[in-house]
Image (cartoon, rainbow, N blue to C red; front, side, top):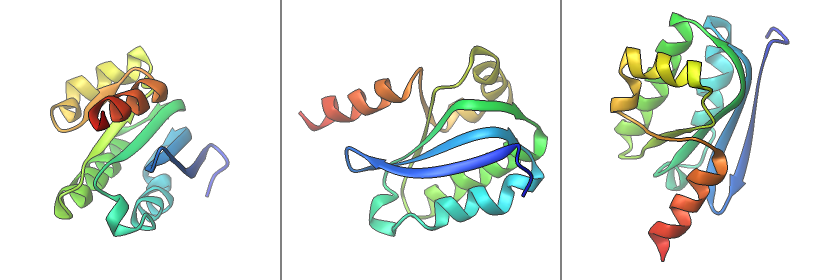
Length: 119
């Protein structure tokens, strides 16, 4: 795995968060899908992909994100995006991913939405 990509998994407020850093390309596929697959099934009802440290994504990276969304749909879960830069938000809008995921400006906004929904 090239050093340009890394992913770490965390649980915040009972929600799995995949913190993605670097470049999302075809070489990221195994690590990104593997990180999603390692989330226990009972926690896949809501998974946040956090992009604040993402520098680059190409068409293969978009395909990987579609794969994650499809896997979530198979288990009746959902994926949400947080921390997209304005450029990445525009890319996600253009390719239509924002039609299938909820997007938050920041991870904090996503977590606050979770708290508000539980109140």
